[in-house]
Length: 434
Image (cartoon, rainbow, N blue to C red; front, side, top):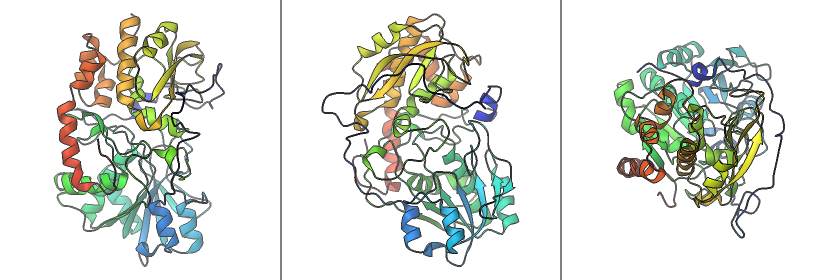
């Protein structure tokens, strides 16, 4: 199957406008006594980046370093690691590689920054979004990189493209004999795995290798898995040296709101930890003719369409889906799907961050939208994008055939169980896994 990424999918949309406040708002729905973003107990957590900064970047001493990062690569004082490395002289940064949205975060979904010299540091920033292993290898040779450092906040979903930037860079590093260092960060939605496995013939820019939809791993753990299970096939060898600088103080059952790690938007449409919690599920609405909330201040928490009315929220409120509540909502997107058109739908409110099952919630949402509205459809591609996001044609086929949410979720039970067994040797952090 031909490769496809968000640049191709979203490129025709008007994505340049800035988001504006919603046309209607409401207080957070809450279950009495349940922890939410305001009262969830917080624990001190130290990221891999902060641990290395505190150690004077000792793991990088004497090496020419290329850094893959974006605005999330910050220390506790919100200084970016590249700025601190250069200013302190603690590491010899000879190149930066910018992923989707760019190193400094100036670009919208499906876009990036062209190669340029960063005015603050004087370091060349290469456009690495969508780069092949061959292109990464050329970057490494041109910059004479010894060690590649990865520091980006992931959000735990297979279709969030930063992990595939990391994988492709790992392939190139293995082929070129470069050391690879991951400065690890917590998975902001916790360490539980959910959802279907990517199947053969559904590889794309939003899922290059077979992992489940909500992988339940940190980027450091994923790097270990990639190196141990996948690199030999694509690179012909494993990395000569993979170093993961672990997070201290984090457990698998602790979401972002339970840590003191500063939240920096990993992408323009990921404004809050709540967004990250629902994203592995509600991102599936990208594949439909409903707005997934782009063009509002609550993307992926707001989902709506011109043909949706109050009945959707009413139906969903009867489902008793763990960790979330649904509010009837109306908005007019400022860009992307249905820009400038009033839409009706729902806002997904987090009532208990520790209990959210985003894929279960989104499956119920999609089943009910399909049941209630004859105008419900895919976004003009006959269901190709839902196949790429979910990893096969199964989800879309079952939905359109009238399957229940429970039947759809149950269909991937065996492959999820297999994933939990396969990933276990590569996990680094304590806490429940499933």
